[in-house]
Image (cartoon, rainbow, N blue to C red):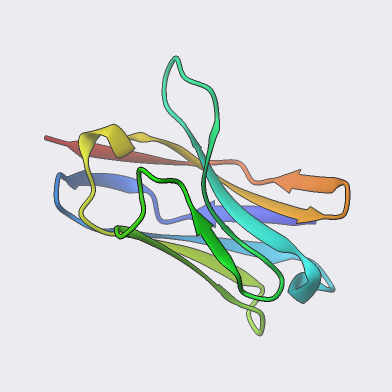
Length: 114
């Protein structure tokens, strides 16, 4: 599985961004998908996950602000990020899982200015 993330950029606090991750997978619909992020000097952390069946889960820090969704027809997962805060600044990574296998995208930078 190859993952291509896009949509990062520079935004002011309170603004919005939409990240997208396109997957090259013959059976995208069976994959669990997720977004992680890693800020400088910090460990990579899970931001949002969506199961093959569409069940979602969010880190407490982004609940009510971020929405993860998937489009199985287009092999794509999105992360809508609203009310962005400077502490959301990080490299965001797309992740796919199936059983014990996991794949990572290349990351996209999100910078939120105060």
